[in-house]
Length: 390
Image (cartoon, rainbow, N blue to C red; front, top):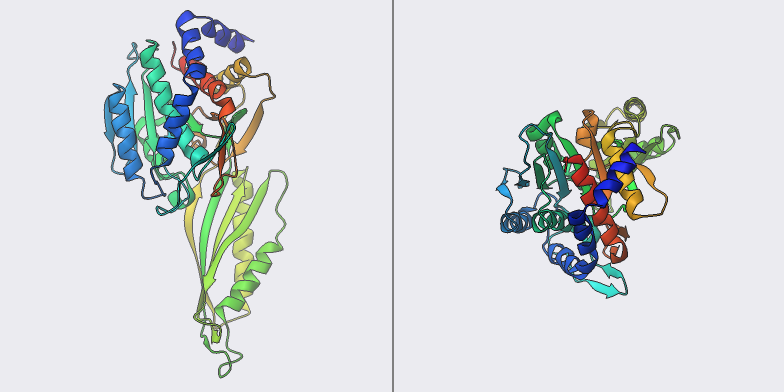
């Protein structure tokens, strides 16, 4: 109740009330900002153009120390009035899962906007800019410095490289809020661990007729996939595996010399994830042992560490109280793989929240529901002001 009272008292202050009302009156303006960001291609490892846009906007909003690092993470500081206050880092990822040549045309239907990357994470980036502008326009200066960060490498094989650099820069002496365009009504303070591998199989190969009987790398790969599919993964803690990509071979009438798979392993628990990885290694070796002409190599290509902080942690409680203030709906506590994996894995207080509701993420017909934007931004503002000591 103490945290709820703190949020309620904050929300009653006249400048905060005016700022909260502005999210409703500026809703269409914010929607247009989301679309403007969405129109800039930003595949993982090619976020430079969108980073330049965010850097320009940070500078235009009057943030201090605006700069990019070598990865194209973009930083800007909203100064606090107390040099001893714990800084607050608020981040949203720049990258999308879509190639640079993707048609980014948007379509509107009532409160829904359809377009690749419209929610994940154009809305999150727009939230950063909207929050910074709101703090400036309503003179909401907290005790702590607030660092706004647009970071790279959250999606796919980016392996959270952007957030790794952010946490390396600010360390455990900061609080972290991560913004996603979707996930409104959800709070993430538990990070699932993810280990990703590329498994390469090689064999003698040959002609499908003349060399029939020679070991095919593809056939061996198929047996490995079947063996992995037979593994029993625990339901508690939730643990999963998936072969998401396979490739190899030369032609339909060639016995394959090379074949590969890409494997995704996940768990809520670091120990369960290690056990699953050991089980995969065991079945792979058992299959390959039956084919002495075959060689196999397993390469780690992604490692997102697991971690969590207690629900009673002040930052999590503030996120809950802020959401309760703006919404009567049930709050969902989710476990996910987000940029919070990096600080959570180190026990650093951090939380991921969403600004609205989205659907069909990572699909060309991804959509965003603008209905909840004012509430999502209101939760963000109340959480930010509380965490930064306004």
